[in-house]
Length: 311
Image: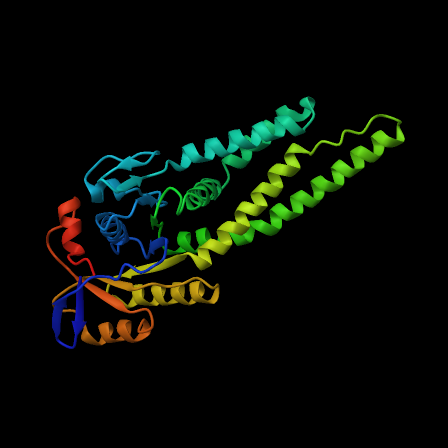
């Protein structure tokens, strides 16, 4: 990496940090996928079991690594695995799981209507994004038992912000569903008792599912603030800086930790005043620069050149 000191430049590298979960985010086209891949490779080269996962529907992670990726983790090096989840497949799995839960808890005669409702809901906006968030929460729970580090190549800024906020936003909704289910179960048991029937003392499977999902959402919301950091990537353009500034403020106000900011694709004739603004705005997090080159960094060797030191 290139860190500026006045007019001079020296080789340096983005600090690895101690966060177990690292998100790389930014406006589309700033190079966050490349930076995420290079950072994950550095973790792995230092002996850490690292999973690099993409939540960007554009899916350019395989292009950066110069190898095909898929829905399941693919081993890249001895300690690095990478994955590009299929959003549609994740949504199908989610719908199937909800349908299975409904089949266990609801009367058989209403299941066809439930299936039609699920098909309609699955086609709605944001459902694939929500399914990817579910998948990411499951993956976060594999850290640190299965993975020492999780590096996330995020979708562009707006999607990243929604993704990070989703666990906290969904928790009250799931709590409301659980309360409704508790009232329904209590009413059923009361009706059976009044009619003189025998009341089963077993747990309600749907209610247990709702409580389990609530607990998972709460764990995810906590871990995103305690164990994760967001590393924003930008290019030296005023509109990009403005968007990055807004994202940084929203993340910090919500309690998320910001890591070192990467200023990517810095040309030789860059406006020094603009760079000064970037460094002053993110002085607390620290900034690192990567020069604009004519050669695209594709493949492991090129990615290692972006992160040349082990410090």
